[in-house]
Amino acid sequence: SSDSRNQDLARYLDWYNTGRPHYALNKQPPAKRLSQLNNVLRNDS
Image 1 (spheres, rainbow, N blue to C red):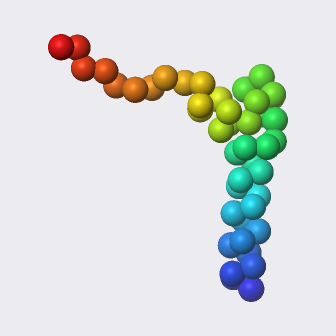
Image 2 (image 1 turned 30 degrees about the vertical axis):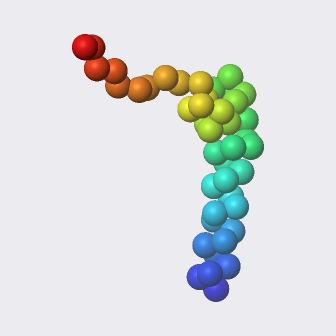
């Protein structure tokens, strides 16, 4: 069913972004890499 697919997709995306090592990111999952970035815009005052 559509509900079942949506639940499976949510679990898959969670695993893909937080659990699976991405070799292009030095074997880190994307979520880990994002937490290490500092993309905050700063205002010089």
